[in-house]
Length: 322
Image (cartoon, rainbow, N blue to C red; front, top):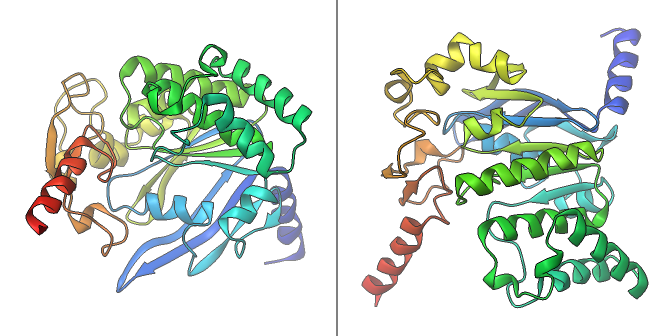
């Protein structure tokens, strides 16, 4: 690499809110992620898609700081944060993170859920009150400010969770499965919130099993396949890519596809209009880490630990263990 290439790469890092370079991760003898490169620009919504076991989840977790890469680097605002734990990326790297699992304090009210985080950040009472009011209004949840979080609908809870992500004034928000477990009307509402983040200057990196919903909201999308980036492009470019259509998305016009046969899993876009049905049990191959997969059922793309089937499985295990 010559000096001009080094300068160009440094300038690229400074101009990008997020950049992942040559990420690699191996579990046992299996290389799950093999040289993934990804970047997110200012006020850009970027999607991260891929079939089960492709390395998508591990790539996302390495970027967030939950998994340590074997090789490669992660940059936030040009700063190398590869060795930073997740909390420091949030605090010093100005990264917000929304997990798939519910993250609100159920016994607190909506406004307390926001103001308590501001208090942890050291904000004084006047600042807490002002910022809480701003976020309640921005996410259209002022009318439920005195309601306990335990009683919120799925859409209201998601709005509150995203509002909580913004208390630290992040430049980028990482959304992990934001469409899991919510109805189609609420999905459209959350898509509106995501666009609202972009319009306010905040970048977004989003990963979800709901490929159709992601492709309808992102500016660009990466598709991970067999541990590598198969394509990086606009939603239209992703939809037209022959390999993506064959192995992952299927035929967007609704005709039959061989994606289910090729992957041993239902295509995320196949039969999208049908009612959710329980699919085959998750197996180790369905996860990036072959040692981390529970044998519970997947329902409508939901995370295996949070779907109704998973909760029922846990109840049954408790009964049989007695």
